[in-house]
Image (cartoon, rainbow, N blue to C red; front, side, top):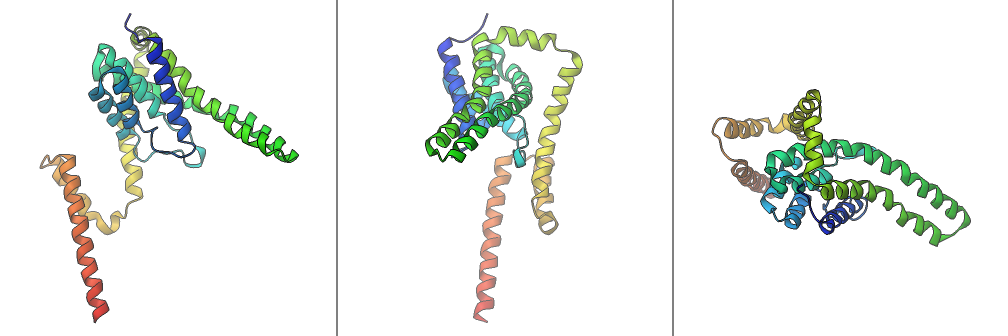
Length: 251
């Protein structure tokens, strides 16, 4: 049965723990799927696969965030598990087939982590009423444990058990579940782009949206080329606007 050593499983579990905990504090974007996929690929010896799966999951996560404490798919854990399983021999297809369900199923673990953390919140309230600053700080630090372990434990088990049990689970999954995962994989990117478009001033700059669409859909220009062109247009418009403002000021 294809699997990793317990050392690799522990290392990836620690990485999952650190990434999700840093999301609560300094950030550093370590929890992003692209970064998690790269680091996992570095650990398992397949960086291109990690970048590919991470980039695909990043596309799904566009526009999604935990606004107001809402639970969203955990694409960090999905990138870690998907890259690790795909590197065992299945490649991108097998890795992504595992990554997306993992990201969606982690929403339940996210709710569990948030619920258990309330124990330490009540403990901090108790110490605050007593004026015990050290107790409040201790409860604050311990509050990260449920959050981190809800990611570290599933990652450890998935990586340590290897591709065998997971592939068996995928093969025995009902058709409606596999079809549902496929549909979600197509819907989430559209949803992410739709959320981003609602935050952009499209009524004012709709011609640029049409230009980008034509360049990609009809002229087959790569996204990187469109991005470079967009940056150039942005700088050009800024230069024109700045000169116009200076002319009005001089007048």
